[in-house]
Length: 275
Length: 286
Image 1 (spheres, chains in turn green, orange):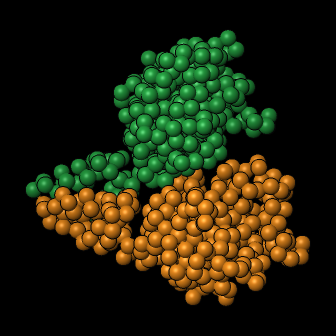
Image 2 (cartoon, each protein chain N blue to C red):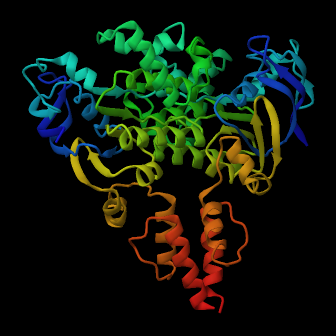
Image 3 (spheres, rainbow over the protein chains, first blue to last red):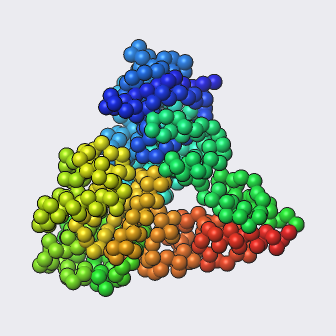
């Protein structure tokens, strides 16, 4: 079933050029969608339109078949959680526990229930040990985990990660990507990851590619990633496994296409053991 | 030898209960004309290290030699202005520091501060913006109307316009799209090869270290763990593991295949060579 639908949506920041230009797409309930595009392609604007932080100029947006408008706005915002790029810009509480509580307090959840919810989601993101820690004592990856706990505590059905790993070091990045995949598997949430990490794209169910505010490609990761030249022209890239296979094919060796390191190792081992 | 750290320690909040040793007896030499990657986990002391290079931080103990100047705990170098002109330091997310109305004014700000005449500053700014991939049509635009990657180019152009002989960059490609990051790294290689600048890059991206750098310096808990050539560094799998460094994809693949029984030379660090080795292994088995 469709969870999110954009229908001919346009938006302009300056009333001259469209940052989002006649964009239409659908996102399936429970799917993991990667929205990719270079810096300035309009990726983040999509997330802001979805919760009406920016108001579209044209077109319609539907969440759970509800049209996004003044009457449905708050019901829709309750369904959507967003984790932003900069870990320092979204830590509001004085401690980890306070920060997770922030949204719950706004929703006037009773304090006994609140404690239980905070404990549960702090455990979920593996931050129980740091409950009373101040943000200055945490790494970027830990702050992003707290942000994820705070958002999950609001029980959204859609979770958006807006370049949530791009300011983290490799370890922080790996932790968060792993956590996102775990949440997706366990909770059947609809997940949207706005990213230009091409290796992450391989793990999505569906990929939407934006350029100059338009959807220029859409499909499964394999379908999108095989269009190498187009991706490079769009200032993106292809995963390492595909680059390697291109080199290998030049030596007259035939293989299946692989978009992840795991797939590549399996395929090469299969060739190697074949007599 | 333009840069040498001699037994440098830096302690934040020394003599207070909050004192914290960020750098611990660092001895290090950086060769003139090289591109050096400075790597290490978050909080290891990389940024503290590079902020010593133009005396933004002074050593708590020890001294360092930068170009022809000496920096120690007691005093800032006599000719601080000259040092700051010669060592261009680009912080993380430098685009947050843009402030002028137009791009040309922003890039001219540094040189003018160092006493360059307006006309010459404009001339230099134009040239350097071109090298950074922004043609004359951008000059009168506001830097705030640019995309993230372009803003960062303007900020870096502002440093390059001062014509420093040492260029220090703290995570210059964080947050850029793949082609933007590639172009940025190629710009630094050009600065090194064509304009003979000594380049130091603080980075977490091992692909960039492998593809663009000559030397690697590893900082770990404020200590200097290792300083060596890139090829030597990535051949030492045991060290990489110990440092919990996620190696570049080509080395990950090489090691995965070796553990699966492929006979592959462990010193290969190039994708073409690895493909050739895998091809000959597979053909051999056919």
